[in-house]
Image (cartoon, rainbow, N blue to C red):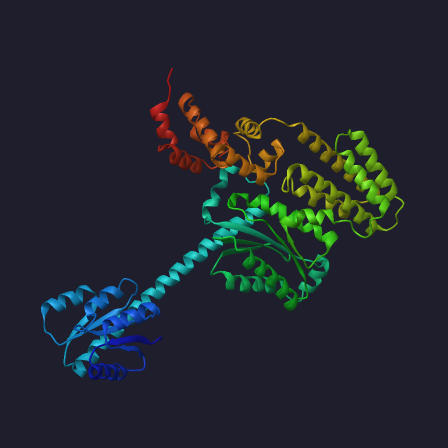
Length: 538
């Protein structure tokens, strides 16, 4: 067990040394860490050096600061036990000493046997206090672990569930306020080769161990959560009080270096921009999945930052793309602006006519990926990164799934036409996006509503729309939807006899208890109580 750290304060050196010998004679568990000749000297040294101790043995009468004042002042910043040594048998001193928390009040000259008995009592109390603190610490640790486990379960569910209705966005309260940054980590090696290797060694656990060890070293300055996305793929969510880019960048580089050094793999890491509203996590997740698709052109073992996206796309012509294919891709891009679908289809047909004469599947795949990336970049110029982020990742998988060249051609043709129509619709829109969003929300109160769905309807990126809506209206999109749904609930409670659980379901709340709790938070009454006071009878 740890020693009992003791400080002795007395202005008489002879008594000070004798107290030191008496304490040391009581056993190895006692440790004298400091001796002081005055209360002021002791106070200054203890507070300036942040000295931690268990027991203070102090004289009462000292020149600059007496013992009772010393105890009183130190109690403001330290937790400790104290023993008063005094040459005065004065009841007032005793009362004050006990009020300041002194364990005992010992008169000079100090009797060796009585002093030893007092120290034994002190030891029992200090050890008992330590045991209690340890138990509370263990309980607190278990509680924190339960909270963390619940948060990880929520994060895992959210990243697997692409379309979370805003009516159940209550999960955001489980996370602290702060500035967030999401990382997506993926092994570069072919999964089938990895599976063969993983059959003999559990590299998944090894990589988690590496991430945890590095993250825990930085955990003093930031909160973090880590969970799996799939085989040898991971999400890491970081929350900090200030935007310390350097520390996050250092963390990312250390992940990459240690994985390459300690495992047979290399990894690529997608790093999202900062965001403050945790409910944007599903959108940011889609952005990172799309961002890491650039490995197909720029290679692995790299860190891809979201703000690098424009540079990546501009410089994304792979070496296998010939000048003819390059020209035909840009003809398709040109047809997206101000021309009809016929011209776009014709340009796609010309590209695939050229590709049909190529015998290398790799060159065909590179050409299709180049086309998809360039079209996606065109859409970003119009609407910003994040709108339908999965549209790129999905189409890039087409080359793997297509059974033959005709299937590949048809899939790409349909995708390009769909983008063409999105571009045309976006160009025609000139009305207020907030009014259009509100109109759509009020028409769909009983349906599944996500930020992504609203943003798609008004042709904005989800992240930009969320920020724009709040800037224009002064309220979050979640608050607006909740307000509209609950206002509609009030109307139904006032004018119909529809059961509460039916109203809840009709307005998109499948959990009636959650609906009732939310209603009471907003209006101070449960739905049943509200109906009782406000129902309008004919």
